[in-house]
Length: 178
Image 1: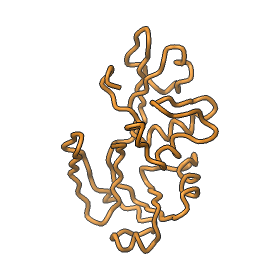
Image 2: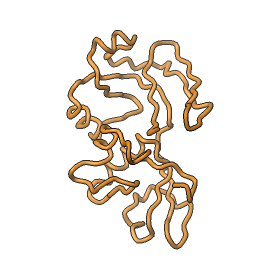
Image 3: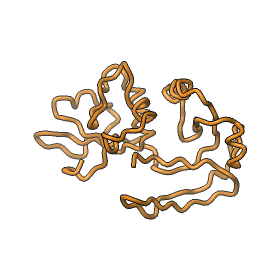
């Protein structure tokens, strides 16, 4: 949103990624075009998805402020919109310990939408176990105390540069809609 200097979780609407749309919207939710997310009836699920997409701020028209989770803090308000801060958003880039390969996108979506899913620990990927092996990763639950560190050090419209270090092969998660 250029008016408030914030990015939109949808990215560029004309070129939305299928898996992105599948995760943000579904038959039980209204259209997600132009950043319009319906919270009613699915607040827990919607919060976890917003965390996964590292949504730190939520812009809400004043007539709908009553549907925002009570854990969100008001940081700005004017006659048109209230901006809330999500205290549980994930960082934009991080390592996960467990990578689960699965070729069926419906199975992946079902698991990622589960209330028990923690994207900071597990990544579901459309791949075979062989694909993971060839990339140097394992599909086994390899929870390690040596998680590694990663941070974005340069970001512009055409490039994201990440400084990352880890003592072993790890799966790096980057939340970016292009």
